[in-house]
Length: 261
Ligand SMILES: Nc1ncnc2c1ncn2[C@@H]1O[C@H](COP(=O)(O)OP(=O)(O)OP(=O)(O)O)[C@@H](O)[C@H]1O
Ligand SMILES: [Mg+2]
Image (tube, rainbow, N blue to C red):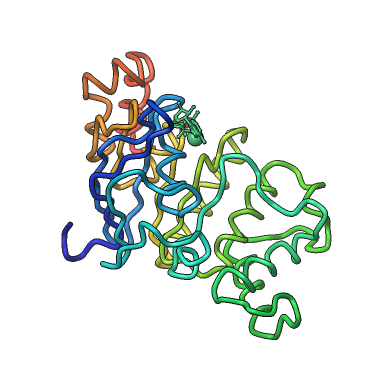
């Protein structure tokens, strides 16, 4: 682990029976960085997020956040320490309004609440406003979450994560299912969040999104890291092309990065 790392995963493994979903994985994350994670279906990307966020404990290895060992902490304790995440599939309270969804996150996501739900004070409301502003929420805050269109659902999930005031934000496929215009919108949103000082790890299959946003990219395959480095190196890496990108996608990405688009 380097001294300046915000997050360090050290020889991390997760076994489901005989399957090593994550296998002996180590990497560091610098404060302020955007790290992009790609890789084929079943590579272990979401499982890695489960381990970091504590939803599923690691079988082996250690996770350090700001130098503190968080490997065995509960998901709540990890969230309170400053790590928030969004999910591959939408995760919101569908029968609650937009604002109430973010209120719940702002209230429970930051501190231990021994007597839940008695009073959400002015401070909570301020954090809710800030989180909705951070995703540039323009819609009706009283609408039920279950009635929102797809981009808004993703933005709401993001606002909920931000309402916990994270230092590190984990985003699992933030643009899955979005059209090109919506992808642009999400890209601008992620850039704004990063500029506000939040460190980000994002998992994404949409490679254009991944390479344009990430300063560093990690590609996983069978639970292991097969590439770690700048996005530019990705399109020239033989293993990455063979197991993941394919020749065509690699050439298109290469052209995209050269054009600086
Ligand atoms: N709770 C679980 N129990 C058993 N096996 C699991 C569990 N969660 C994940 N797996 C298996 O672990 C492997 C990694 O899954 P994971 O969801 O982490 O992949 P992924 O890289 O996120 O894939 P995708 O791109 O499709 O989202 C897969 O083979 C999956 O079936
Ligand atoms: Mg996944």
